[in-house]
Image (tube, rainbow, N blue to C red; front, side):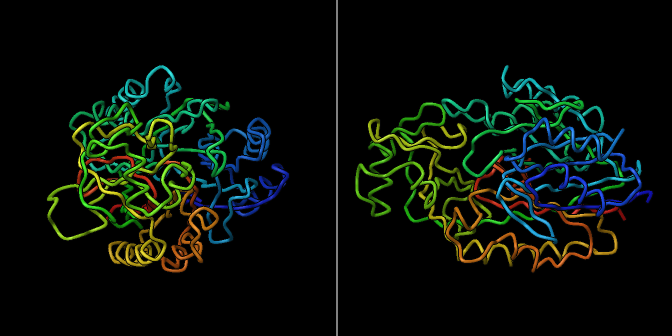
Length: 402
């Protein structure tokens, strides 16, 4: 069992039964670390007790997930349980955590980045997981852009391959929680730092296309965009999309459009990989504004309205997975992890096919595979440092270094 990674999946309203099913799939030998993705309809304290009883004396990481994705099945009913079990020091990541997000996301990210820097060399693979929901009433998210700005500052000149995702209890963004230090925690962030002999290759799967010319943000407060080109932002977006003015809900907009910022040459031919897209969280007809998932745009930022395109999404999956397969050698693959925006689930996107199923069909992994539905995805972007992305799928294959 030394140097092995195993995955397991179950869907059961009884969390102890789900944990027992997963234990049987993983085998009798105790792993060194279990990374768990727990459907949000399971009580977190009961989930901790079930996993602790099923895997005694094993380090536990992970937390809530809007759903899980595996070769044995996938779903987002809230009763899923997905596990990744690491056996052996040469494949088991070191777990470094902070519980200080509520005190300041950028400062917490910076502190975690400094600690990760002290435990890595250039090129190391790191998985970041964090509680997405800062408060439920009113709904406020922990901004991934601020977390990552701090984390990158803490890393200083360390160049790492960082992927990650925000943890949710469900696709309606009701809450989120994590396992930290053998307890259930809110406002936490965990870095899983893989050993030097493990590398990662990542594909970002998109699915948006521009449906407007470039516009400037002329008024913004945090994540709330009030004006585009001097007009109320909601009015501009409704007009561009052909929606009835003044009647649009934030949920309706979030299903059909994002705001995208094109990276690099603005006049270069369209390439989905050049866009950082931001989902729309709220619409406020009284203020004529929209609120984005992230507060990283500013006055003067040039954006385009992006249509969420299901056909393009499925094409991007096939194209991206095939390209990633060409870059990896199956004999060296330890496992694959898919971090999938919850909005890409067919119940949210309206796609005729579950794109996560298409990922599995196209990848056809002969090695362990696990995925979860997330709030925000983090990945290396255009050869640059890692940043948060919206409405993407981030597929990473972890391998033994040659």
